[in-house]
Length: 67
Length: 255
Image (cartoon, rainbow over all chains, first blue to last red; front, top):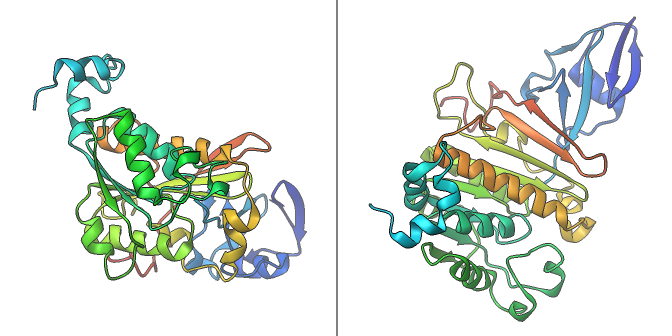
């Protein structure tokens, strides 16, 4: 069991998961948001490889384009 | 170039700063900055870059001032409604500081004109209102080796980052496409006109964007390359987090 924090809320998973799996779990459509993990943006092309570990602190960062 | 007596007076509060000084003020006067979009972000950008004595300011915008712009686009005023934003902004910049040469580009930035236009400047400040243009500006700046200071707005929040993937660094620096890989599918929901915006957010973000432009010209402090600033007005929370290069980014992976 791992415990992680997303936008300040605690969530638990049976095991480590990839960022891709996490985004599916959260219902986040690919292409609308970035994921910040431990104060760093995770590059999109690495979503399949980067694993979420116990204690990770994450924020969903929405793309905004207004000016 | 020697500063005139008038310039010594006008820029006295800059010159007294050891990080700026007479040398720094001359750098500002020699600098050429392109402001993409004379809207919410472009307004404070233009006002402060002009006041700071940035010598050449290009403005690219093909839009007309409308009444609903004035709630946040403070470079324009009521009498300018119905006139081109480039004309309105030029008049205001000229009134603030006659040292500034304004170059008006009353056109849309497209794949046809982007390179020719951006090549004339040292630094680009992007404050446009759509992702297509943001990605075009990014790809062109990366190709031409131009520093890009990019800001974006939503209802109560803002984002700000500096992109120079061509610059030497311990770890490869990202471009805008490393953050936003392609145009988001629902981008129409993201514009200020569709979703609304607390006008002052444009002032906060555009002024911080101007700060980063000046820091890049003066080469002082810690810039925002490899980082992104996230601002939320409702919680009055501001954070700077790391933004690494995407190793597979089509724009900058080979730079």
